[in-house]
Amino acid sequence: MKTFFKWLGIGVLVIILGAAAWGTHEWNAEKPFSFRVFLDRTLIQQALKSPQTLTSIGVLDGMGIKGHNAHLDDASLASSQATFDELMQVKNVLVQYEDLDEDQQLSKDIALYLLNTLSGFEKYQYHSYPFNQMSGAQSNFPSFMDGQHPITDVESVDFYISRLSESKRYFTQMLEGMKLREEKNILPPRFVIQRVIDEMQGFIDKPVKENILYTSVQRRMKESDEIVEADYDGLLSNVATEIENTVYPTYQMLIDYFTGLKPKAGTDDGLWHLEGGGEAYKLALRFFTTTDYSADYIHNVGLSEVDRIQAEILAILAQERFDVSQGFTAAINTLAEDERFYYPDTAEGREQILADYQTILDEIDAGLGDAFLVRPEAGMEVKRIPQFKEKTAPGAYYEAPAFDGSRPGVFFANLYDIKATPTYSMRTLAYHEGIPGHHFQIAIAMELEGLPIFRTVAPFVAYIEGWALYSERLAWDLGFQDDPFDNIGRLQAELFRAVRLVVDTGIHAKRWTREEAIDYMLANTGMAESDVTSEIERYIVMPGQATSYKVGMMKILELREKAKLALGDKFVLGEFHDAVLKNGAVPLDVLEQIIDKYIADTLS
Image (tube, rainbow, N blue to C red; front, top):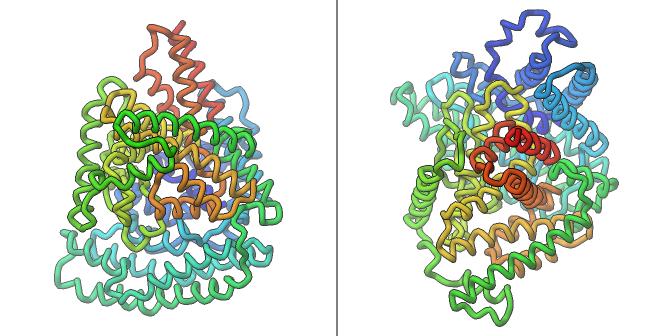
């Protein structure tokens, strides 16, 4: 529940200075007079309890308030339950607000949607795997310390050391949740446990001075103008001591626990194998797609889309004189084996990939014209996924900018397997993760003015990921993928999301094994086996999430066509994108209401 809320509440403190202006009554009253105050206050009060959220936001640091950077969150079961209880009380107060204007009513409806979803998950809140090979607590901690914890001066390094010293407390609390799950027989598949053990063992097998927790702070100290060389040795010695005496023994404690847990785990992969898993998966699909689509419906849509997209790819390959007589799998594998589409498997080759991604993003950013009337102020950059976790990480991901402008948005690219980055796939991936995909949508939402804060950061994945996948199609519509092989890359990416509909529901509702899902994805995508394996293992530990992309994209395209038909010559693409983007992330049925209003307003 705490993770859910932190996802919802990231960025809360952009208006923290306004708290004083609200006055004691508005801050402390159970039901403030101002509806907006009530919504924003709720997020602020929760964020203030999360030091890691405050660090990620970065706003307080700019005000000179930095003490939170010395601490990790309270990860105890008691804290999680307290958060849930508080949010249920928020729900009770929320329903008391009446006679709201149109925008306020929309905010109320969206807030209730989120709180009702959270309430529905209460019975199944432990149907999850906090330690997993994709985004587990064991990898999130070093990633947070490397990517989020600021290193600017001596005090910031001391805070870094303090956080290292709290790692034992933090992970001991995390194990409370694991042990409760163990009592309830909610165990991850055995391969997940082995992946986690292997990752943690590799983490502590490194000499301390080669560990990312040491090299990260060492590098950033040298980059800081506020830390003099005379302080280096003493500070780094303290960092090394804390890693050696606290962090490594803590990870050994975790390894010992999971080693003992492994024999109790089974080899069934889907959520169905847990008691109540079928209902938990229905809730997951409802949350991630913001629809009432059944697993069967999603599965069948996926199968139909796979057939359609494969036919389009085969037609292009035939035009490019590839042999398509043996069907899709053989043809796409022939394309994948063509060496002209790959970079050298060297450090220099990987550096060139990052440079070329940046060139692609700069090109589309400069060439979008009036397709977007609103653009984000925040910049973005391309980085490699940290090597300690890239083997099991996804092909790419986006990290939002800091609210205070101190950190740009980042498109992280996985360069572990050079064969997973053919040149014809790069444009599509850059458009999805960067411009006009995640960076535009997320950064614009963060910068919206006049909305309650939660509206700028709401976690509606079908909207967020649907927009990113729609952006791939949009770039093609606008002429940025005129090379036929780039178009294959676009179609292959869409095919990948269609296949996700099939395998996610296959694993969690139709009892497919991990191996069956891998075989299906290999046969129907042409992706590298390393990527396929990583993806299938991701779906196993994140049930339902992978279905959101295609569902969301299809809805946005449907709404664009609806607007075009209704408006005719009055349809302006930039105005449509304004309507989609300027309300923050919303459930898909709410997005349709927004587009219907945009159509009506344009016609009036």
